[in-house]
Amino acid sequence: MQSRGPVARVAAIYDIHGNLPALEAVLDDIRRADVDHVVVGGDVFPGPMARECLTRLLDLDLPVQFIQGNGDRVVLGQLAGRAPSEVPEQFREVVRWVAQQLDPEHGRLLASWAKTLRVAIPDLGEVLFCHATPRSDTEIFTRLTPEDRLLPLFEGLGVSVVVCGHTHMQFDRRVGRVRVVNAGSVGMPFGEPGAYWLVLGPDVQLRRTYYDLAKAAERIRATSYPQAHAFAAHNVMEPQSEATILESFTRAELR
Figure 1 (cartoon, rainbow, N blue to C red):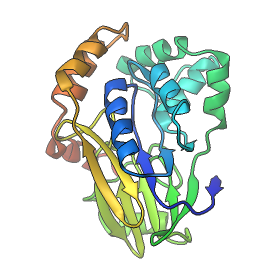
Figure 2: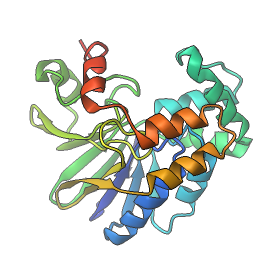
Figure 3: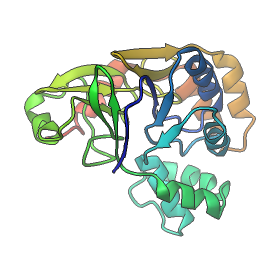
């Protein structure tokens, strides 16, 4: 786990998944939001322009800290020659493709990303950033998951706020005495199209950035990404509805 001293305003961007047009639009909004720090909450990878997204984040003229998501982890494993057995067969080709776009220096960078990060933010207190839950980068819960199932995960952390992602749907709820906020997804949202993210400090602001979806889809389809047309259609132009995904995730959430 990494930690950082107090910062006034933090932008939290999660689940970019190589959607460079969405990331570019969010970064434009971040520059207008008067933030002084950016946390990238995992899953820059995989996706159609993931290498370009990483470059853009590393070149940002603001302090940036990264945590590792499950997508980043399986790409890192692929770079090391480990086939991603946890990934469904239909998505393994995209993990292989993304790994082929990277070099050893990228691998060392991904390996250096912590699993969690703590940042002190005035008026919010100590904030813990994780990808899925504080103990796992793959566990699923949503705004509808019963609190009693979540209490063991969020009690005793010594923080006032936990920021997570992974399920690609924004929410702001309480689990016991902890405020738990999902940043949503920049690049692969469920629900209404757009790019979702957060500003933290002095309160929590759920943000949604609009961008030119048709132009973004065109740019994505022009890549050699193995599932570029499906990504453009189903992750940019017409994402699955929140209701559909909530029903699906209910069957897979914490028990």
